[in-house]
Amino acid sequence: QVQLVESGGGLVQAGGSLSLSCAASGRTFSRYVMGWFRQAPGKEREFVAGIRWSGDRTLYADSVKGRFTISRDSAKNTVTLQMSRLKPEDTAVYHCAASAVMEIFTSTAAYDSWGQGTQVTVSS
Image 1 (cartoon, helix red, strand yellow):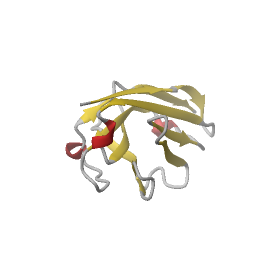
Image 2 (tube, helix red, strand yellow):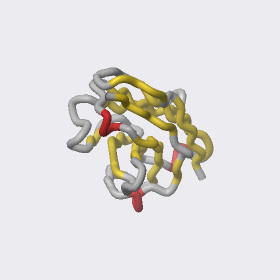
Image 3 (tube, helix red, strand yellow):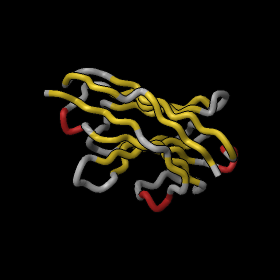
Image 4 (tube, helix red, strand yellow):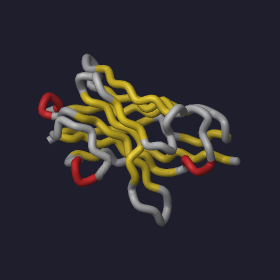
């Protein structure tokens, strides 16, 4: 099992930036892909970005492409989501997730370890 802890959420004005971090511990060597998902009130959890631990592949949701960047630090077992040009519609609880599947999938079903989440609120 992998334990995931997110940090870095908060309140920011539209157009601003935030950086989220996910610290992984446990059987991290058995996980190939790390992902960020978000869930707004009354909506389903949706894929935001994913990265393979090797760092050779990333995937972004169309809604965040060009504004968000996902990266990982294998030595520190951390994954970072750098968010810029934030919009009010980016407001949600952001969750880090880990998958033992080698490809990056956008479905929550592909991920078996989840963090508790961190709130991101973007004011207009």
